[in-house]
Length: 555
Image 1 (cartoon, rainbow, N blue to C red):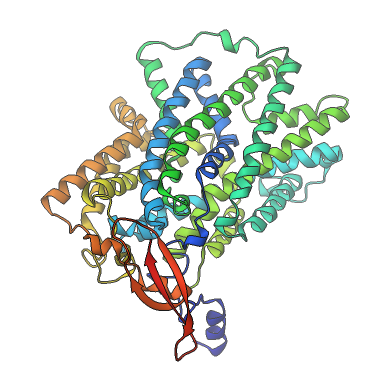
Image 2 (cartoon, rainbow, N blue to C red; image 1 turned 45 degrees about the horizontal axis):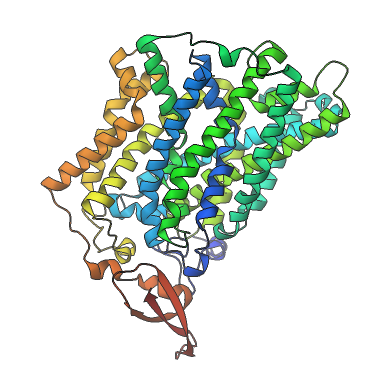
């Protein structure tokens, strides 16, 4: 390797506070979150879900059920049930993060192994990058309506890229949103909780304003609220279940890496009730707003228009031009939706991708750098091609939840049943520790992972257009439950047949040596085995190398 190349690698290489390069097992972002960064309280998790619930996908999920023949209240009931189940999965996976303050790429090692955890982590990172591009493209449409509301002539901007699959105006809007997203990615996770607080206020306000605007212009919600279901019997029952499962699938990625945000909790209880209550409640309210907007658009435009962005664009492109009041209203709503998509993209994609990529390339990537990779990959993948190539793009992405459900099943079984809610945090960062298993891989976890996927493979092919038996379709309708349940049961049985060592109290209480170097080199001391959390205290004395000594205490 040339001298120049070595200098470049050395320049981008991450360094520990002790001056050494970050290793595969350890870097700053992989270590347990220090006490000064555990700032998320119960209210932050409640507002987080209020903020996350308000996005275009939530509107579209409600629309799919009605278009398939369900009544509005049947769809809404399915939404309540689906997100209630999703809340349970999120809390089940979040508990370990709140207790031990570890993030997903480190936590997954306890169940899949030190090296085996790379595959689930890569799966999550890949989906985060893809969804980052998709959500940014959707947000770009909100930027487009904002500019269109201010300068109506923007719609007539000459298209300099006719062969690209989009036009200059929409591409420019997409580019501008990515610049905004890149600015937000710069800030550390524990400092952006205020973004979700702002989104929790502004985004619902924008949605309510759009709802009022639609209802006033349509003189009500139309006939949809009194229309009966167009299907019955078992068909209605399975469509209801499909609607419920689509809500769970929408949360599959966040359920998988729930420990990432839970690791910032000030205390473990902060991640339980706020999420069990706030998650289904906020998504149900947002879905109801989407249902009512869709009902009014049938009267306004003669057809259902489920995307709020399309509704606003139609308001602006009326014959004779929109009034100044309408343009001002659309501008405000567009800003609200931009903030909504920004919060959703950061919460579900850039932070998750950053945390995941950190564990795969710890020598060169931090959470911030990984977040920027997600932004760049999402931009370069030209998401408008993916979204326009098939009307079933969302179905294909939802099929990926089959893979994630098996991962969640293994994780939950390992933590609650096999590990007895104990994690030897020290061994998550050791090559020869408790979680080395077979050359770094837990073969039981991989066998359970494959077993959870297998029943859904045929149905997944059917979702992509293949001709499959009805039974396979029914199983796939229950995909997340099937994947989770089969993986959970298989892992449990395999661990009964081939037992795994359970961490002792002392192993659970031991703090990673690398954590001490995160603030200061020092003595590791255990104060109590009944409480969890890490507190780094700096000693005022310096050692012979001029490095501060310290003590890491379990508090």
